[in-house]
Length: 72
Image (cartoon, rainbow, N blue to C red; front, side, top):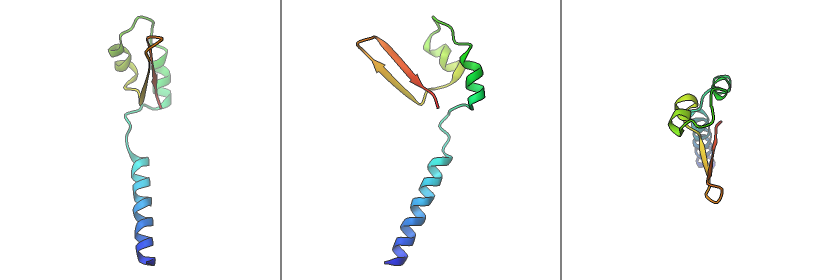
């Protein structure tokens, strides 16, 4: 039982470290911060994504006909 517990702990730690090491496609803060000021009203979604990259989450607000993008 004790050996099985150790194996489970080692696997859990390994998975936790693997998740922390995943590349989410996000950009460093200073790079995103510099790019964010280049966004202008009227730009298309494709233009914004080319400038600052893909958001990590997208929230839709159908009643307001708006969408919000979350960046890390």
